[in-house]
Length: 186
Image (tube, rainbow, N blue to C red; front, side):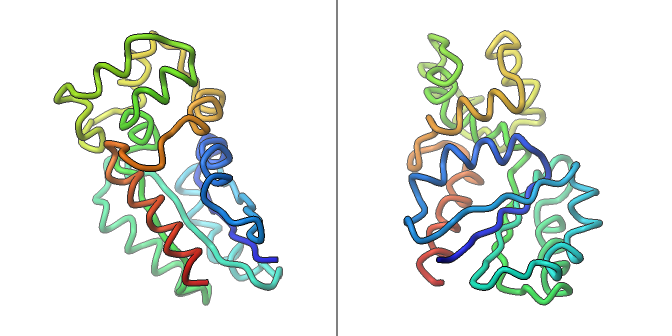
């Protein structure tokens, strides 16, 4: 049995992954979730947590929001922390700008998950063709859903509805492709 540990900055990312991973991971790989209290907590404790993980046959995936930072700087810092911990083979992915960009890349998933109507037809509009470029995806999803979206419950409801292909969020597609390659190479 193999284990993949997902190191995440917030509980909503775990809830989204719980809806996505069963459709990606083979039955001999068990996902585990290490949830931190925000990005600063993740960066502060990551080396210690990676070094302290003792379960054999374990690989790690780190996922963090870009927020207002430069994506390459965020990823570079996380990669360096993984090297420091002796886990250079860790997969690092950054959600551009925020996790909610993933959801805005598949408006039909929001529609199904939150039991709304009329959202999927907006996917072709300029705003939602590249949701990774939106300055504040959390605010945008709040407006779009008339505040029905709540981070943890919304992520749980939407995650299992996200399409694994065709999502308009390039960072989501990169995450999925990375996890698939990671699995195949280990």
